[in-house]
Length: 166
Image 1 (cartoon, rainbow, N blue to C red):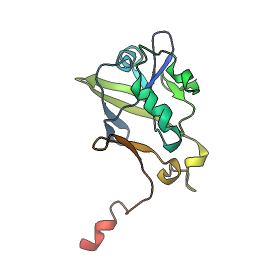
Image 2 (tube, rainbow, N blue to C red; image 1 turned 30 degrees about the vertical axis):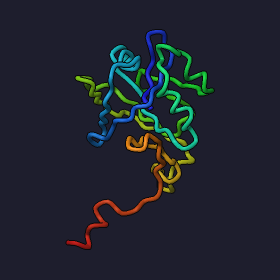
Image 3 (cartoon, rainbow, N blue to C red; image 1 turned 180 degrees about the vertical axis):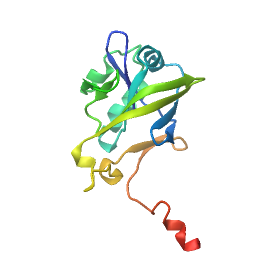
Image 4 (tube, rainbow, N blue to C red; image 1 turned 90 degrees about the vertical axis):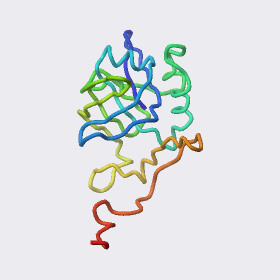
């Protein structure tokens, strides 16, 4: 979920299906023309929040209607915002994990953002203070089935599961 302010400081949020991690502190998102892209050019900042099993309906709604047509769509679903203390963008309070980002570049529909801060609610953290995806239960878009799928259990250890072949 990508959130921005418009020229009147009204929050806008949309679902972005095509995104990923670029480096340890940069993300990339493919975006066509939206109110969000206008807002990005205006503020040079955005937040990324992770929709979860609890917010499927609201998140789908955010991706289904344009902020140009429904400027109060955040309030319509009963969500609230807090201004980010680190970038010129809103934090959607109902999402448990948010990345606060500055625009690095936005060319040919490819947005690259620098993550300057991450905030997470206590209930999705493990004992070491790291985000636990099993607790977060984020959803992803399944383009083949046109549905949302929940992520959860770990099925292997990165840089460890393949060691048996060394």
